[in-house]
Figure: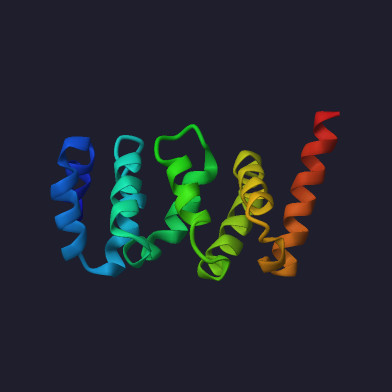
Amino acid sequence: MIEELINLLRDEKNINEVLLYLEQIDKCEIGKIVSMGDKTTWKNTMEAFSILGFDTWKYAISEMFTLLQDLNWPGALESRELLASVSLDEYKKELNIAVKKAVDTDDVEWAVELIGFIIDNCVLDLLNTDAKDKLKKIFLNTVINLQ
């Protein structure tokens, strides 16, 4: 069913069928739509999530943060907007995990995007101390390398 849904997501004309699938799918499978999809499906996925609302896409928050690795990817900006539209408490855990992954993998671009998200949405107070320290380290290293 997930593979069929991903294939439907490749064409924006299929949005009505996609919405029907998403309403029937096991909520625990929602994240797979993002992680198993690709640049040809992410934008349409975010459009469908936007239509169906938070009760549907809350199961894909972790995967939505991965789209912030590159804001040029189709669907990345839409993912960022959806995440910013809900209460900060809804994604605290997933944001901390994303920060840790970005730092652990030395993905500077992703870390910078996450820093931007944090600053734009005033959520620094939600990060745990470890995540804050890692973000500071990567930010300082980036600034030093730019000089």
